[in-house]
Image (cartoon, rainbow, N blue to C red; front, side, top):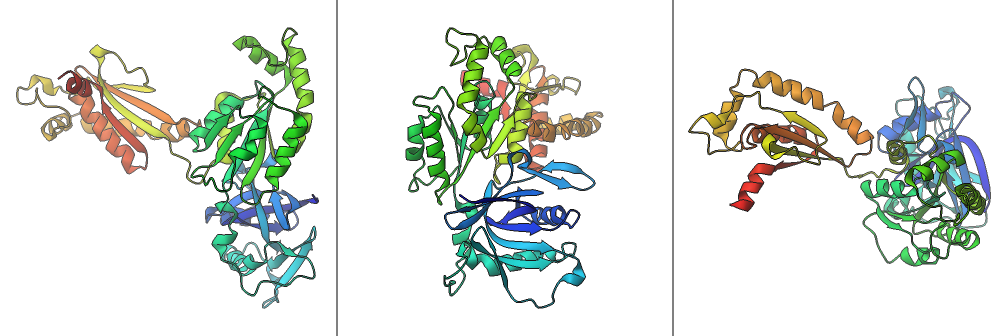
Amino acid sequence: MSALRLHATCVAIGGAGIVLRGPSGAGKSDLALRLIEAGARLVADDQVLLAAEAGRLVARAPAPIAGKLEVRGVGIVPVATESRAAVALVADLVAGDAVERLPEPEQETILGIAVARVTLAPFETSAPAKLRLALARAQGNIGAPAAGASMPESPAPVAEKAEAARPRVLLVTGLSGAGRSTALNAFEDMGYETVDNLPATLVSALVQPEAARDRPLAIGIDIRTRDFGAAPFLATIDAMRARDDIDFLVLFLDCDDETLLRRYSQTRRRHPLAHDRPVADGIGMERRRLAQLRDRADWVIDTTDFTEGDLRRELRSSFALARTPAMAVIVTSFAYGQGIPRAADLVFDVRFLRNPHYLDTLRDKTGEDPEVGAYIEGDPGYAEFFERFTGFIAPLLPRYRAEGKSYLTIAIGCTGGRHRSVYIAEKLGAWLAERGFRAAIRHRELERDKVLG
């Protein structure tokens, strides 16, 4: 397989790759950012790996910079990414006076593959729109032979060419103790279907073209997997990469020996290769066996200095899906006399609000009844409380989501769990829904009443 590294940036629109070329400061990252804001996905910034695969020119990012875009004045930021894309267009970025007004369609041959080429001024307001028009014109030329072949009479429909339509298959492997189980849990939370400890010989059988998947697939395999062998495993990887019906890539989790030793000491687990020998011997043996696999991985993540939250954030920045499930927020009311809910992440006490229980007309009602809500809102301190309450919660939600939290439980308590806490839980749930969060409301004591009644 021929390969080439370019000083360039690549984005994917509808799965089709656009390589942006130009010297440092030419505007590659700036134009990529504007395209991403309009719905494109980053493939690679600053350095692009190109390979000729099955008659197509395929772009990937070098592992250390995958999923990261340099934004001048801001820094290196994570953005939505495509693991690879078939290159449909190359754009050379130049000054405005160097752009020809009515150029003839051009092609360039890279690694034996003919690719459409345009010249653009990147800082023009219309540059993103011009690139999309040029890409639409080039769609019929993806993977055209360099010489001696006839071109299609008309471009194929964009939907038929879209790389994004191919299901993603991610192989998660690496050193024992480097975080594979945590990674698989993170992928499951992101919406992937996950399979762990699958025998290497069954990988190809699991990923069948006719087995259409609603979700991408993450497969966990390491040295403990039955029938694991580096050479057969590499052959399986090559076979999967050669397939056109899937978007396949390998993620390798690495870690330094000292940290692995500490992790094994803390968990008191045995290394799978150590047997009756020191853990350090098992780590060294595993590292040697996996050296070739690490070299062939599309992504290598070193978890030496990572917490579990750090690893989850890193994975989300590189592998999050366009429709990754949002963090779900559960708001539950409760009575302090019955104990604080075990699953609570945040607990708030609203017993300072005036209590409807002391009014005969409201005692048998609940916070779900409008009369009770009106009474609570009539408390002189209610309006200021609720404004400060939601003002406190609002900045926490994106931080919890960034930590990779799938569920956040907010518990609101009062004396009996029937009036004040119920009403505030309902109001908070409505406030969350207005801001686009998936909010589930539960009233623990009211639900217990129904069960026992």
